[in-house]
Length: 137
Image 1: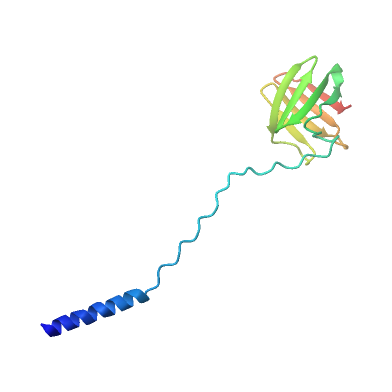
Image 2: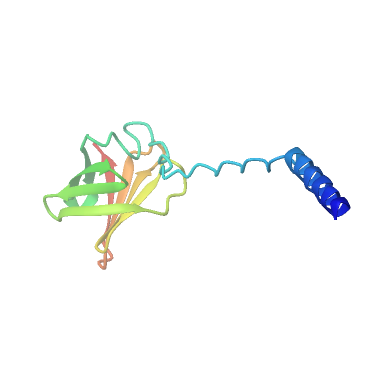
């Protein structure tokens, strides 16, 4: 019996010694930071080109006697015309070159930054087949 107790004591002491030698598991790697930042929009073309300063309204004169002003802000074009009224069009895919931009809604498709100098625009009024070709004033 004494021998069993001695053996049991030795096993307990060895187990305790080995238990203390065991290294703790490494700390878990920190989770990657979650960001909710929205990527910055592409830079706007130079003033006087396709998208003038968002605060400034610019005037276009078109064939067929149409005139309008446009302001650009938050991927929207605010178009005001004495003949056609006010329209808000959202940025749309399109444009062949970086200086070109396209805005549309259910009634209108507007293309800006056309021509060699980027000073021309086209207004496509839907569903009319009318296309107004315009020049920045």
